[in-house]
Image 1 (cartoon, rainbow, N blue to C red):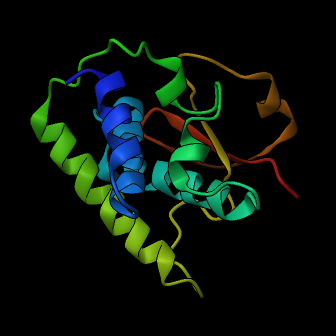
Image 2: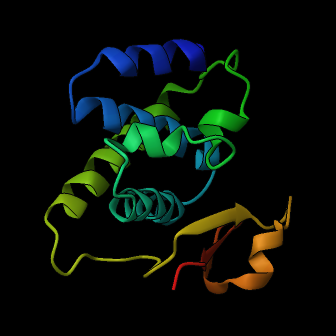
Amino acid sequence: MKLATLLMIAGWLPQPIADQTCLAATLYLEARDQPILGQVAIAEVALRRRSARKRADDLCTVLTEPKQFALTIVSPRYRLRNPGAWNRAWQIAGSAMSRWAQGGERYAVVPAADHFYAYQRVTPSWAAHGERVALIGDHAFYRLSP
């Protein structure tokens, strides 16, 4: 399935399934070849950003903000071709959303991290101004917000 088609379908789905679809697509695109812990950490960053945004109606809105996550960086024509990786991303997204919804003391793989990047590929300028929280797989997780 093409990424554009998946995002269009997500727009028609009810909540929380739409958000789980967007989060699973993000995990698939960002980290399908990474350890499960890395996918959980990326989900935490996305959910933390959603919690910090007062005007974002849903997680899909946060994940489709321009140039923030893979959903807007990867070509809309990109085809998701690995069903095993999709199923794993779907399960991780659902588990992370469920844990996050419980509130209170959340289990955190990357406490307070609100950004990440693939450190072997790029080094964004904001990384110099943040506090590195963890390295998991080929991703570096940072806290930029005070």
